[in-house]
Length: 231
Length: 349
Image (tube, rainbow over all chains, first blue to last red; front, side):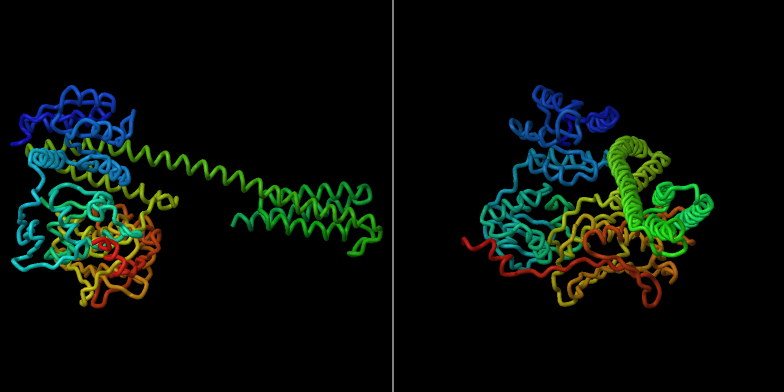
């Protein structure tokens, strides 16, 4: 169990939520630190060196985005954001500011715990080596030969589709915002408003590598935020 | 109704006042008559609005001329200076009536604006204040149900239901206020339907959904807000689930018709009675035979329609051939500039 003996920092200004989450994480064998404000969060994170931080949006003394940037200035510790609905724009801003994932309120502790475990696991594993081949069910991606096979049959991808797949598949499980994907795939070579076609390219890519494009197994949609490659 | 009552009342007041003034005519100066009639005009404007004010002003003008300016009983005015009195009366009464009504409207607008601001603040605070305890309740219930307590499971289910209800009410009030922020972007219908299927995953209806695309394999794209279009589709699917036999197929079909994308959700339920086909889209409407534990407050379809309208689309109902309902979401279609889409990237290669 990777989470046993890990230290987790829970940042939320609502005491009941801190207590409930603290209880759930402690039951999973983790050491739990708590902070009720942005300033506390930075102090405790500096002193306690947590392996992961759960950060609630809507702290009284700073925006979640500020906290994310302040943390990212000196640590790569995974950050999981807790957010209410009606704050899609804020979620995206946080992910762009360096947060790793988010969970929408109200959530079940099991769901949260699963996300925390996935983040811890990913933080320990290195990113997928682009000198390797990955297999996901029927899908096979060979990064060296730039070849994609579905059920053993070679799939023809356009250059954009290949770059998109590579950007997503080398970070399995990780939410990538539209902006992050766009930067990786187009790398500043955009002409006009190329970004608006991102979703269309994803739809085409899905039709090539998914058995059922409306029930995708590999490229999952995070509505209003971006995409995630299945782990 | 109120306007008709005000017209009747102020018509009577004008008649009574004129009769009283008429009998006292010999003792009165023109100025007395003019000022009293002016009071009647103002009263009528205040109570009945602009139209009534103008009608009463015009009537008073004629009565003034007929009965109180010599020669009596004709519209002829003997003394040229009396024209001045008449015109001054008419202008004063019309202007005063207009100003009064305008002032009233401004006060009303300011009041509504204040009410809107208050409502927004209330919505934001309700949203946060309800969700925080709901999160705690759900989390605690979840812990307890893990220990095998079935009652805790029910608490969790009900917390979810309450959360959905809060979400619907908030969305409805934002839609009514025209305050829902929309992100209209180029989107693929694959992703719209995929998003809806993902949202209902794990519920009993998920296994009953069949998806149909155009047979030629065209990728359908349009300009709409993905999140809210998914919401519309999910509401339609949930509605189909609620009103159709539990084993029947729910068909989601996508196609393009000229400038519109049509995404329909068809079920094999009882359909909607002809007289009710528009009423199903009103908030809190429920069909008479709806199960009382359907787990909704009758907001799904009304929110769906408003969300469709808000992004330049539409939502309509039609009876399904062979029995059942077809709800069709229309969204603005888009044409892809294929050349641009790929050239955009590889001009540097």
